[in-house]
Length: 152
Image (cartoon, rainbow, N blue to C red; front, side):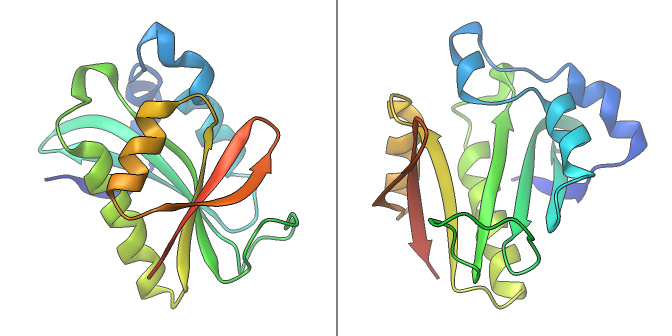
């Protein structure tokens, strides 16, 4: 359903224009910020999400085994879904699930034991989606975000 390809220079401006609804702004950073920050985060990889020839979103992953700044709740044998943004025009079409499937496959290819993600604690739609995909709340929090995990 989607194809995830490493972000290229040609993706930067089009991905800037892929945004969420106004009521979702506080849940995820804009794609331009993620792309810029990914160049400076150890172990970070960002991918443009394509549906055919249309850019529908962005996923940024961190291989925690390569990351230099682990926090107490981080598993060094995990892949962390650092950012996931599906554009407002492409939500509710299975792209979020497909992006998470990609993250899990990417983690397996790297020999990681689990995938972790955090969501703003009152982002009930995202938390419900992750739980429907087999993620469980770990009981850990970072600021106003709750952590979910799926053991592979």
